[in-house]
Length: 249
Image (cartoon, rainbow, N blue to C red):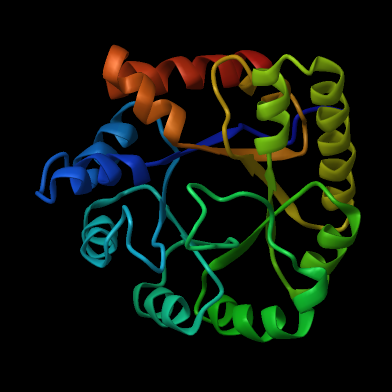
């Protein structure tokens, strides 16, 4: 199958805010990081406004909406508070993610199949406001089918298990997870869903995912912010862009 178009890179700038918040000041500025990411070739910026505001703050979303010339992908839990914020700002994209206060990072995909009715009603106003609605899910057939039924335009496949298996040296399990993602990306595309992927991707793990022809966007954050300590943010993003393009070719 031929690739369906250029693979986009969304850069998540949450952990610039994590470093800022460690000292309670204003530096480093996530908006400055977002603008640098734009200059380095990012096709979009992702920011997750968590209920506990552990990294990105409300003022960051205000500033990003004002400053960006590339699309903002606003990650959020399916709560009334977050829906209200999204409807006020009307970002290009809204990605609905699961969220638990005690987790360090998003641990898995959203459970859509068990909450179809609630989620269908939750995303309808967001779609009506012109936001592209994405659902962050595991590569699981029932969840993909439920995402299509509730009216999501996009799914983002959770690549965390694939990356964890690679880091642990469990290569048979890694390859099985990659095969599952490949099958489910193709299935979601057949259902008319746009397919994105992300979570935990690094230089060592990105190429097999980037090579999946139905995947149209990767969202990568923590690794790039960490790598920027050693390379600088622009060069770190440029190398990821190079690897993605190489895999796509």
